[in-house]
Image (tube, rainbow, N blue to C red; front, side):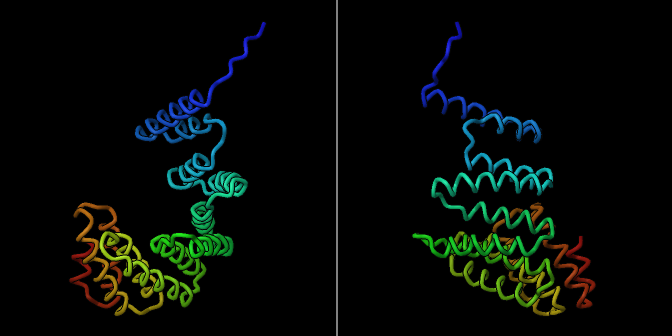
Length: 236
């Protein structure tokens, strides 16, 4: 005789939590493939877990095609349940941009932006994030005038948020400075970069990789302007 065991909803939640805890431990140990395998054991599939798996493929493995597969699975579940799909669209936009498929990247970033603009509670930081995604995609296809327009809109929104949003504003300004540099307007790029530097120094530690990366970008701008002494200090 086969004994059939019926799990209660509490049992299912417990098993799911156990798998997720183990997956997080594997991530902490740098065991990305094993963590993904553990997340895949979680049943039934949920959009949240599928997005996590997609992000792991994208950010930890650089496997954007696999990431897209999981994001699209998540989107199907979200659409069926009537859930917010804007974050999933954003991840799809980022993945397609990394594959240099800029038209698809723009499509998903614009879809995310539309949802966020129509949300019952408007989140200016999320809208700014979509605008930056659009700017980055335009920048990738070298449409610098459109890139500048959207990243400037994002900066205006991020500035309007006020206290507590310094890091978002700083990273926004870094992108704005880089686009000015790509357009050959290094004087304006330097002006914006200095604003970004002041914000970064107020909200990240001195040994932050974000600050180190930015200083390299700043040095490039300074070098282009012939400010070799300043550039040398930034590169150091």
